Image (cartoon, each protein chain N blue to C red):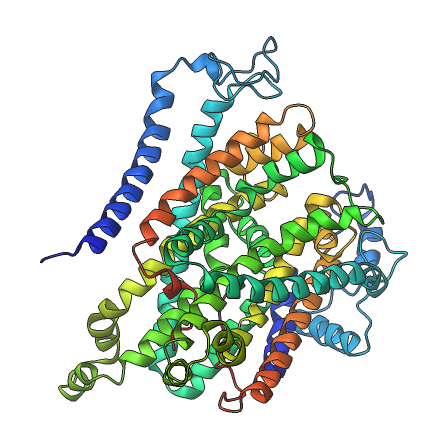
Amino acid sequence: MVFTLFLLTIFCFLLLKKLPGGPFDDEAIPATSIKNQLVHYYGLDQPLHRQYINYLGNLLRGDLGFSLQNPQYKVSQIISKNLWVTLFYGFIASVLSIVLGIFGGVILIQLPSNVGLISESLIFFFLSTPFFSWVPALIYFFTIKWTLFPMVFSDKIGAWILPLLVLSIRPVLRLSLLLKNILKEVMQTQYIQTARAMGFSEKQILYRWALPNAMIPWFGYLGPLISHLLSGSVLVESLFLMPGMGRLYIQSIMERDYILSLAVTLSFGIIVIIIHYLLDVLAFFVDPLVSASNSTREWW
Amino acid sequence: MKLNTGHKRKLKIQYFGWTLFLGIVLFSYIFPYLQPTSKYQTNSQEILLGPSYLHWFGTDSLGRDLFFRSLLGVQNTLQVGLMAAIVALTLGVLVGSVSGMIHPLGDSIIMRCVDLFIALPQLVLVTLWTIFFKNLFPSEKYFYLALPLAIGVSSWMIYAKVIRNSFLKEKNLIYVQNAKAIGSPFFHTMYYHIFPNVLQISISTLILQIPHYLFFESFLSFIGQGFSAQQVSLGTLIQNGWVHLTFSPHLIIFPSFILFLLSMPFYFIIFTKNSDNSYRTRR
């Protein structure tokens, strides 16, 4: 984890240094001497490794510098102002996805085989269609045609519903499909056969033995869920104009404010890496047979 | 080879997918040539018209026919998506095969680097790489390379993981040991003996990923980093439709439906593979 975090700081720093467009490009600064003074003030004239070491030192002290576009604000202030929105509804969305994912998986495994096949292919079909092919229609009908929810984010409860729906519908479907597949395998193992032979009902077997055992491999997919939700938050926040990290990121990219973009990318990376690590440790406690390294990690 | 009925039906679904895909591609390339060019021109008399017989998808805010713009958009979006797939697959195969074959220490170092790119949200990565590659190819001539490269570079990791896992599984099998015993060189073993056996799984991963590449293109154009407003792609059309969402919803509904149609064949093609195969760990 630490090595990955270190790589992350190097990656963000190098990439964002190489991005085009200086911070002072669009401003009408006549004299180059003023520009040079500004560049010197922000430390942009030092050699690259020097800048990196400075950056790392400041980072360890929690100081991410000042925003290039809004010099009156510190980057850490801007981020802490925006972070809670993303974290709060990200937390709600992840709880929602986990709970509904379990429900969905349990429902899917109990469906009769033909209905199950149809619903499963519908879900798979939905998962393979891109975000933009259904979200615009959804937003149009829910916000403009039927005016059920406000289109722009506000403090009201109703404004949270549509972003949460858009954000968590894919993880819910994906997690339930996954749980169903794992359950299908578990239901054919020998201890379940034994329970069947002893005369327990299918429902009893499912809830008492199959589900807890199916949760162990399923647990490993929660890490990618977090990345997926953060990635989705970039899109959802810029669609609904929510004051969160994703929107901040898009704004900073458009304004070429690369101290801010670097900070946002870094905080995204740090959040995901730490959560992945915690989940790996937790997976070790849930199932001691799993080695604590990376065997439970999977792609989303 | 004798096929049972279930297999036959699955093959039929796969052929249906390919036919649909080829049909959409041919239609989007041929149909615009059969129509008068006045349909692309701006026309101040016909602004924001709804769907009608003359304009199947209606017209946009400059009076251009949306149906033809959608067809042109399909061309550009598909080009970007397929080129991105090639870039991602190439990078993933290179990294994954090397990582699977070399010493475990090097393998774990490469895997930590891959973990880094997994940790960053993909939309963030794709935006960063787009700006980077646009800077690398500032001239108009190579500009169309920037988007596929950016999308490919930000999504090669899944292939690297899949191929590495397959290589780890394959390299202990007897045919590889035999090849090594008779003195087959490192790269020859890798790409001549092992690679054909892991090709199947990487191709099916690839087909599953192409709709995501189409989505990345739309996203990039949507936030203003992809195609510029002069060029047509499904992303710029959706972005344009988003502006007019309240009063002319056809401008966003139709392009997004076209995007949906475009990703549908890949679903039918992949349907033949075991559907849970794509979501399970390949240990």
